[in-house]
Length: 346
Image 1 (cartoon, helix red, strand yellow):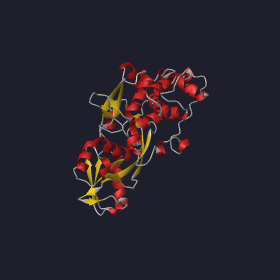
Image 2 (cartoon, one colour):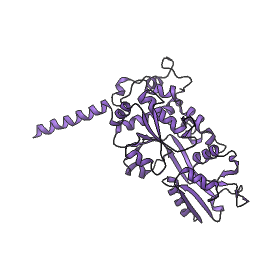
Image 3 (cartoon, helix red, strand yellow):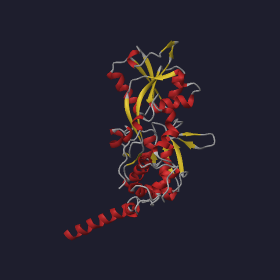
C-alpha cells in the first residue's frame, strides 16, 4: 500500500510538471485558434474605440496586442469583443473571451469570489466627479467640492466600482444626492448631457476621455476636487489556468520594463551588444526559462518592437485624458516619482 502511494505521488508530480512544460489549456486554445479573444470596452475613449474602417485603438487595445505579439507573433491576431460593465466578468467566466482588459478595477471581492484573477496594474487612476459649468443657468465654476452643492443627482454606470464608491461617499459625507444608474457608459453620458443629472462620476480617464471624444468644446465642464476612490486598473483572467495568468501578467509587464531599460519601438534591436544583461535577457529570453511559459525566446522583443514601451502606449492613447494640468503623475516609473516598478527580469 505504501509503495502504491509513492508511485501515485510520483505520477501526479510528473503529470503536473508535464502540464507546466507543455503550457496551459488557454494558451493552447489561443494558439490553435490563431487569434486572441480580448474583452474590451464599448466606445471607451482612450482605451478602446473602433474607427469607421473597423480598426481598433486605445490603451487597453494595445495591451491586447501585446499578448497577441507574445503568443501568436502577430499583433493583429486579436478579436476584440466589446463588453459592457455588467457582463464583462460573466463573459470571462463563461470562456467567451480569453482575457478582459476593460478599465477593470482590482478589488478584493472580484479577485477572490468570481473565479478570476487580476494579473497586475497597467494604469493607476482615481474616481472623481464631473460637473457642468452651468447648472440651471447658474455658474458652478467656483464649486470645488461636492459638499458645496445643496442637492444634486449623480449619473453612474451599473456594474461598476464607481456605483458602490459613490454610494459610500454620499453616506460618509451626509450629502443630499440622488443616484441615477444607467445601463452603459453611453447612457450615462446621454443622461448627463441632457441635464438629467448635474454630476457624473467615473474614473478620471473615462470622464476626460468622454469629453475629448464626444464634445467639440469640452471646456463647459470641470472636475471637482473630491477624490472618491483610488482605481488600480488592469487585466483579468480565469483563475483555473496559472500558465495563462503568467503569460498575461508578463506580457503586461514588458512595456513597463522596456521603458525602465530604455527600450522602445524606435530603438529596439536584439543584436545590440551594448545592452545591459537584463535587457539582453528580456529581448532573447533563455530557453530554460521558457519551458513552463510556452513561449519562444523573442516573445518580449516582439511586444516592444510592434507595440512599444509604456511611455509610448500612454502618450499615444492617454495624453489627452490625463488629469488637468498633469502629465503621467502616479503612472510614471518609480524612478520619476510614480508607482510603476517593474519586476526584475531574472
